[in-house]
Image (tube, rainbow, N blue to C red):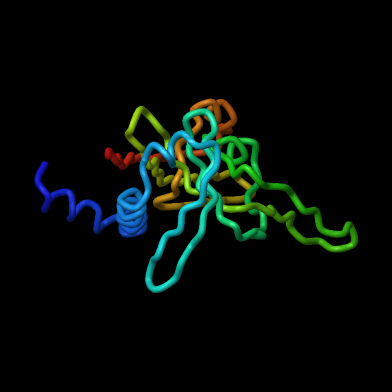
Length: 177
């Protein structure tokens, strides 16, 4: 594959391209072995004039680049399938329940992670896009998400319901030093 084809493909996936370019500059400054084989280290990405710091945790051949920021997000469309569909989960997360007097959604409290799998001196950045469509006589719902840094957990398939349609696209970006 030539450089033009690779660049064209990566430009269509700008978020991932930006991450991989930053990963390349970090690995130039730090030994890849130090990042891969230490149980914990810290890396800093610079993107659009901002610095982002991640704690790197190596856990069972998966590198978790954990953000220092904690995020609160409402839990929408909570189903057994959606709870299980992602192969990788944040290391730090928890559910926050609203007071019983308020009709509000539950919130997920977590530290976002970038997930990279490790094989010898090769890093793999998994990415997935998906569509979930559910329709019954009483309601219809759908969810579409593009370019999430994660991989699909195949065990989740058994939790789809008869009214669900699920489409998935997975990509892997490789980095070798």
